[in-house]
Image (tube, rainbow, N blue to C red):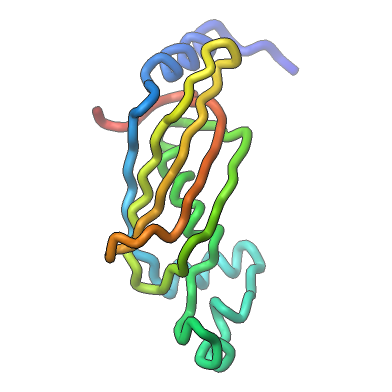
Length: 149
């Protein structure tokens, strides 16, 4: 593998130094029918809980639920804004997300490993009623922080 340039190495150091333990980033979005259609089409996730109206009507949900990984992907928006390269992710789904729900995802950096130059973070996703629907955790490193401060 080729060696990274000195300029790139400095960019990585600057990004790493610009984030601190306890720092939070938040992203909010409302999920639509189109979001589900696109996600299911791209991933091949044709789970009947997402797309089969007859099945859904007979289920305990009564209406389509958002694919779990679509909800979980909200952390990638924040990761993209800080050029974060994840090395590990995990998710705990604690409640359904429905079409039309507005979800707020808050990422908190919880640990900074200076030796390995890695961060550990948690994320909590809440619906518009203030109910937590997803708990997440991930590790990795930032490369280019581009968020307004």
